[in-house]
Length: 422
Ligand SMILES: *Cc1c(COP(=O)(O)O)cnc(C)c1O
Image (cartoon, rainbow, N blue to C red; front, side, top):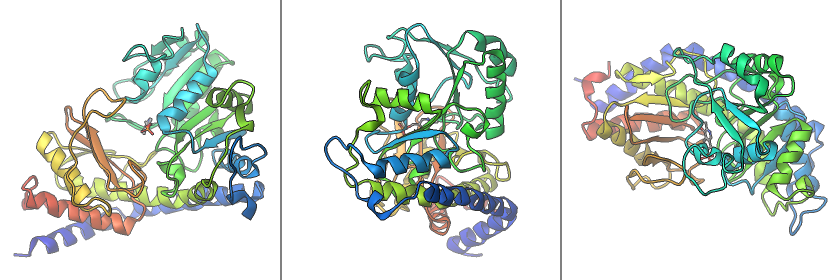
């Protein structure tokens, strides 16, 4: 009888071997997007002076301008707005929506309910916050079909009377499929065929650089996301970005600063070096994280958990959902990840009422940047089916150790049985 540690090591090695093709496909994509990122640095003629930053109004901050150029090219867009003063992905997406929508305009979400924190931005939940709906924007929602694909017929018939078609690429705290760039292309084509003025906005969180091409390459007009996810490369300590059509990015900038000021202001303090370095390393971070997700899928699938996506399915974001079906197993998994994390390994995560979320959320994030989910982290709302959303991992080798440690932790807590490691 082998000891548990040997069993975990052998089990993980076997799973990894089976996943060989999926893992190496990720490395191919990493090469493709790395080329684009490097080219973006050359096009923007990024220079040593650009790394220094500015104070006060930040007039003529050439570093800020070069950073916007780099992000625009990386996101295959005309222009971009990248600021450390965007506090999160929600802030970036809200800035895009408020930037573009006006009273009486209609916003149509074509991927069902938006991410939890955006319900209050839109006004579907909470009142008195100055949501889009309170300002007279009308909100409509088209559910995904039962097989998880977009309702293209519905989009074609509703898009006529709509100003914004809103797409959430990644799954959020749901078990639906993540949309691919090809899915987004078809939505954009369908919507624009019905209404050529429609503006397609994509919540791009967790999707960046996972595929060779980004949404703006295939017809999206604006994308937005967080810099403590993919595009910060694990280096950015805060921030958000918006990229897309130049005229629309300008409207977003008016919303972020003030009408008439827009992109011309906003000092960068000492953040430029880390934002440049972050986006430079982003293809690498996304690759490590995606391979971590694949390994986690393989391990938990083989231990009898339902996992989304399946280990060998193509990936369009860095997220791995693991369904625990049980509150205690879910908490044990999160405690295990926390216990194996580099920071705060000695604390146990507890569910809490996080701002913007309807249910208590448990979050294991023993990360260098608070809540950074490009670092290995696991979280989920405390509700059926008690699923954990696992993401990140700046180093595949490190993540592999952390996942094996988590299995060991769960065995120790008896939330997992050794017989499952077959
Ligand atoms: C993370 C995320 C957001 C934004 O979340 P923040 O915590 O505000 O950065 C929005 N949509 C999706 C799908 C996400 O995964």
